Image (cartoon, rainbow, N blue to C red; front, side):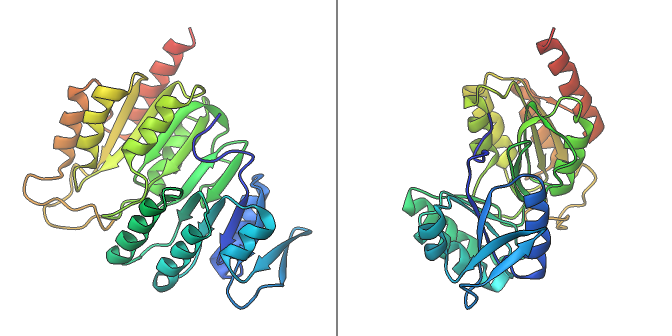
Length: 296
């Protein structure tokens, strides 16, 4: 099984005719994703060929959903158009909207996240994220599908690069789903959302959670794990050497005084029984030990 994304998901690509959209649509199709259409305003009625397969382009998300039954959209549009694109997908009733775009203004993210919550039907992943992959089923975003195959580990990460590394490190076990939630100050899907989904997924045996400095998401996730998660969880927190007051990599990765430090996050996680590695490789080894014990 998997979370949020399955082999039955029907995917549209907003911005498919742009350079990034075209490149990653090619990759997603190659990994088996069921892409049923693209959306580019003003180009409705056209089609784009990918390795011999013609994908229809629609002028709006509403038209794409009506014609294809799409329930997932992945957004590859420039930051200034992202808010409008996501609003359009929400208004069309798309159940999952994966926003890859980096540099989306925080107030725009706040607006479309609030709109999604008000809709009661749409889940947002991102923005500024690598997306989600359920290996062997579907891949929406920019995660390379060749890193690891299907298995019984769930992975949720703020960092795209660390998502890839952890998948590679644990490729001998494989993943039910791996989700990069993004590191902006406001994101649609949180660690807690993913932890709950993996807890509920009968085909996920254990969970890797990757966090980073800034904010209190990892501390809140620790409290959630204590009360709600019975499956083994291992963690990694990036940013132990980050200087105070300097944004590191992600817009939300900034330490202010004693708030948001890697040490505080590690302490909170370990206090609820989550083993935290000092490096990604050590974290992978902690999970490897857990999986070996589970498979005895």
